[in-house]
Length: 213
Image (cartoon, rainbow, N blue to C red):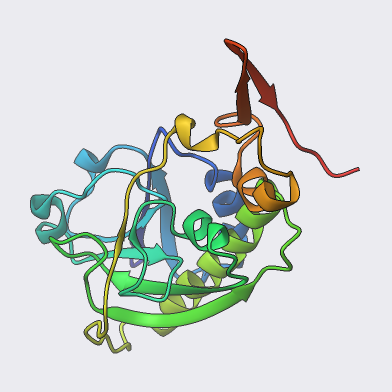
């Protein structure tokens, strides 16, 4: 009996929000593969690898020792390369979010694109709802690739690019002199558990956690 080809999903231990969505999606993927979820890149070689929500720069040695290293990046590449692309677009009042499946390359988010798609935000979703829509679109692209593999075409990125820096806890700070309405997009992208919104007032720091009623 022929062994199923292994498909790896490489996750970042420091950014595991997507793991639960991945486990839910596995049952809908083609049955002809053996799916393995790992957080250890050292065990992967000569394989097809999907790198999900990874906050570290991939080593070129890792890319070259595998057959295909694939990334799903939610932006209209080459725009918004780098970190937190969805959050940075929301801060620019964007609702239509482009998403790409691309091959990993030595330069971050610069590899050839295989598929493109979009997902739409209403402008009222909070962080968990935004993540869910992002995850659904992510696994839609991955499923399409797995169904069609090895038949696919990849093409070089074209256009003007920009690179987003990594967001940290300090980026969740609210300005108490501005209205809630004017800072609503910042509130939306803050995570209640890992990087909640906060403000400083008279040498004190106050944390705000936002929920829908």
